Length: 269
Image (cartoon, one colour):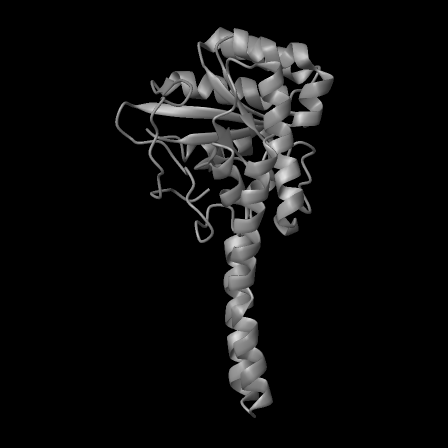
């Protein structure tokens, strides 16, 4: 990726970091001037705000994101995270063909590099690929410093663009949806728009397919962005159930339109 773009993005990120640290001076001043209770209150308020913005996936405190599609047009979007997977991806592609559904696959860069033929097959079959970081550091992504964030997001973008130069990713999804104050800034610098979801069944951690499907069904409506995963013990079974459900819903299940506004209206998921 362009070194100048990287340097400019990191400058903006570290400037934002310095501004975020400004309240620490207020805490220190209050503590040194005998206002211990006020110092503790300010510290807790700032810390709580930061944690909510970071760990609540669809909180837009640190930058805009797409949480659902416009309800007009009767469109719903199926998104599939964590691929490509050598067994699950081919099976899921066949399921989607069977039900006439187009999806957005959020792919992990290093996995895509190991299975380039699957990435190309996704695109050949009419689906879209998205950026899901280079190594998928799910437990630590929310705390990555700006330089490491750049490596993860830019690295994946470079990997996927090299594999499918005519169809580079337009959207980025952070692992587990967690993002810090520098994530949206980095994605935007790379021409990406951050996309979360409005309907999920927690199939990344649960294996009860009826529960997973029912939870998604309760949130399936025009404009829904549905989230399922590859790489789980029930990945193919979930994909089959969700695809059948989406087809039966009479919603149009297609890739995102070329022009897509940032949406802040959402349902709980």
